[in-house]
Amino acid sequence: MLIDNKTATLLSLDWTSGWGHYRFVQELEKLIAAGKNISDCKRDLQILIDKFLSHAVRENVVRQSILEHIFEEWSVEVFEITYEPVKVIK
Image 1 (tube, helix red, strand yellow):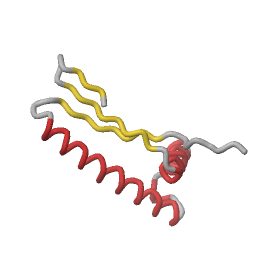
Image 2: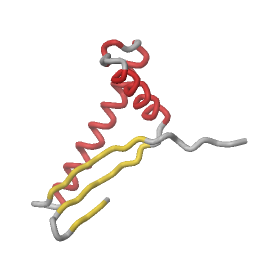
Image 3: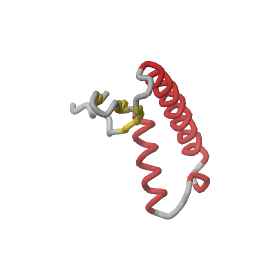
Image 4: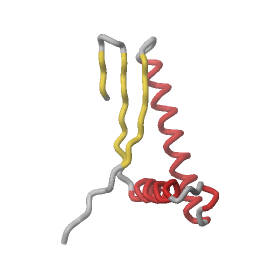
């Protein structure tokens, strides 16, 4: 969390490293670059997208609500950021 007491601003950042989330972001970037949308995806990818979005929205809404309750009258923003998971080198 990043907190600025002077401006009453709170940013909550969730670093998500799950393979499914990372794969989702990669596939979404490919779709955007090709000028396509989610409905153009294969069914298994659509299921992955639905799971990711449901998780991200649910988690962000709960976190946002709790933080807004605790930090009344503050500006509260919640972000979920994906990154490539750590790879095991043998």
